[in-house]
Length: 272
Image 1 (cartoon, rainbow, N blue to C red):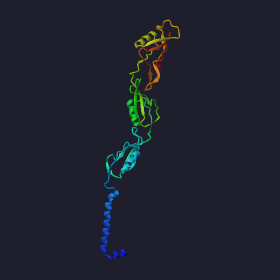
Image 2: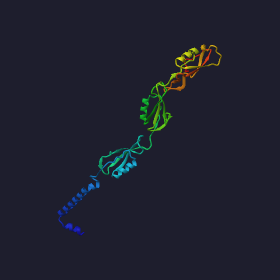
Image 3: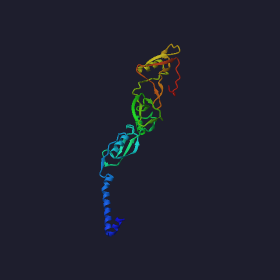
Image 4: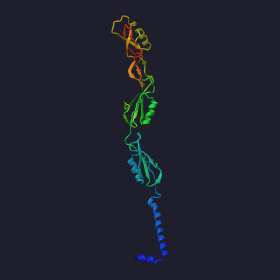
């Protein structure tokens, strides 16, 4: 009360000046302390955390006075799980302490994709298809097939993989690819319906040998007819385009023919 009485006894203008002075002092104190309150002028270099485990990255960032937020995550099969893929701001930028560093990390679990049926596709088309799905091209092995660079079979870990099977993104797909006939050897000739002499001449022209088998007595085998042969001209397999595959042999190989006195009836609309 005594202090108030003293103020009231002073002239009004003195009190006004005293109040203005107090306000100015308070404002000066506030502005001088603002830099200390906000950390004005205190900067730090952003650490490089790309490639680190997310927990290690957080520790490094917070140790320098920054905040950290996980902004996004996606899957990259060539990077470590839970590793940092990207940071903002980037490493070595000079920023104010207390700023937030945003991280993008790699997912722990790979997304699942459905294996397509690539048999019959060209090698180039199959490779494009794999990239779209997030799968990787593995080894390419040539196999005997008349269709060059066409997928004959698709494999994972050495075993055929059926269409529709779920695979982890980034899985490696290996392919068996047609060689275009470069390794098919000599196609087995169709000898059925020929006489034995004709069959011998045809086999000899290809460098093949004949063995003869019959269930009946035949005096003149040269004039007898071929009614069957082993191997036949077609196998039971189909090629990459669904067509019957011709049997092959090597030079010097042998074909067994079955003969009879009567010529066989040949159905031209059927596959041997």
